Image 1 (cartoon, rainbow, N blue to C red):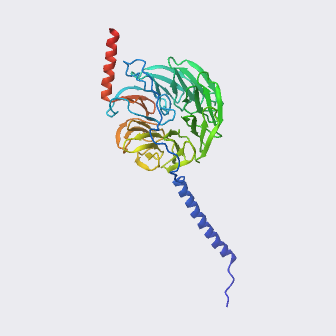
Image 2: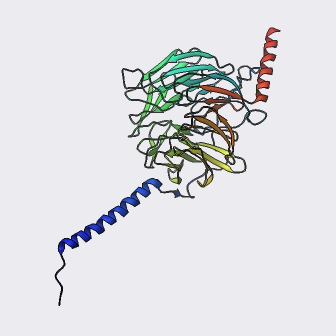
Image 3: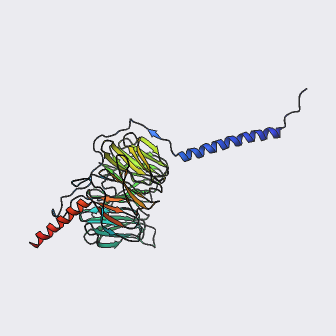
Length: 447
């Protein structure tokens, strides 16, 4: 005898329960995918240029051969060179090594989010309150200061007797930013260009142009002599990063996750590549590739010519950090970058394979700097600054204070950037050489 017909309400409940379980499983999978970040990519067919592909840092003939602080070893733009590789070889008779003597400190109480630049006998740093300072390299004395805005978050650039800077707000009454050119001798303004929107993009210098991005989604090329706008490229999303240059092409990411390649002469689009996420990281161009960090928690390498993704690696935490790219003895071309998860990474520039990873704790927000075989980084979470060996990541030195960016070098000495101050660190042997040179020069001047 047949039983009673099934209760349709119970069937609906069973179906609903099954659907709920399926939805929970899918939601869990979604959370897992989000926590893992984007898929990793590896495409060995993407172009890679062997040889020394880390760009060049401007070298001048010294104005005074007897002054060791006018040695021609400039660091004129954020990243050290147009390719923004943040790498400089050792320039002295031996490698820079701790212990260090702290020769001077240009101290303050206002945030220094970005590092200084170096031209000739002075370094130039831009505070977050819009005050630009010129500091003597040998003594740390402030040569001049100039208020160029009320809010800033970028590094200046210097060359040919001028220093260039961009600001988020030109004063507290307006929302627009500004680009300015000043004389390096006295800080007097040569020109300024008022912008409708804000800019925190550290300027790039070419022979005749100043190039930077804006939060309105533009990349602007201004004439260095006058500030006249030569071309305007529409990225379509805020451009917060600095623009990198290699050959006749520019590279920059936007806050919609798109990497742009732009022709330098015309400002026209060369190619674009959608990476997803958001790109705050300033790209580094080396070995025929563009390396960049992503707020989605990844690091990518893109073919400079083709725009194809060569590799992408997931990191612990999102990546604001600007990568450094350097040749490492016995290891080859290496990419160094930090993440908000508190890790410092070293990747094979060709394959993206990990060379080493160091868990630092805290978080790494700013860029990485490599001087010879020293990897410099700042830990914003721990408020410290560290230097590690490029080959294996071994810790060599730790400074009592650090924040966003570790600083720069002239190849013989270090100029480190802490939360509010710049300190000059010099190995003892280099201190003795500098002092002897200064005494000899003083005797010659006295006759």
